[in-house]
Length: 326
Image (cartoon, rainbow, N blue to C red; front, top):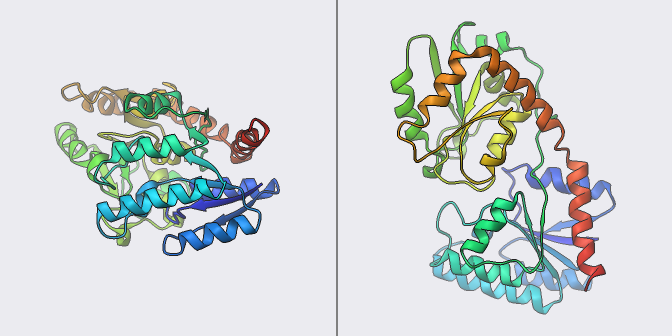
């Protein structure tokens, strides 16, 4: 298989892990840049590439949303005219922040053009249907985990010593860039209500790219934490949750998107519509440490089952089926 990919998201390891495993199977993968998009896909066809894998459509935005929308439509049209099989992985039903003047209409255009939509759960496909975007062909392939990708060699005691945390302190962790949809303000409000001198909330990875946590330091925060809190206001798939599970940490998550499909054995769940809903699982995690440790052990086992070789094989087979049935 020879496949072009757009965009390349360097800060998200999803693509590196997927394509490393696909290349190990013998597939050829090549990224396309936005500024030379059209000549690259034309050259790609001359070189025998016949699959185009699109991930995040908001990458078409350079200046205005209107300009981005016409660029997006032109690129979709060119992909189809050149005879590529267009595959879209639906990481999100809609962008977290507006990318086009009408993101729902743009999504319908994409799903209509796509030969295959890859979703991480049935719920994502259901939500696409709800906005009038019915894939002609779809497949559910779970998001892979990050087990073994990052250093994980230091102990809980060493991690806490680095952060100046006492051994007996109960630690909640929020890790990631701060964006409105991630619900940090809700977490801060909830924490103020349960703050008791025996617990701490760590917020790591603030704001812009300058606030990113280096890969080697992730283990410090996860291994120091007792539980990871992800109070999303809206979400489809969460790599943040899988990252926490990959470090053997149970998560506190809302019943939204694919997070609601996480096994109860690895997650504390709450309804975001419930008044003070976030407080209950935060209290539960702190008050029953034995259950929390049980969930954390199950979290690592769950993450270990989501290996990338399996996901690469299923992705390859789903795309190969497009040619077998065309």
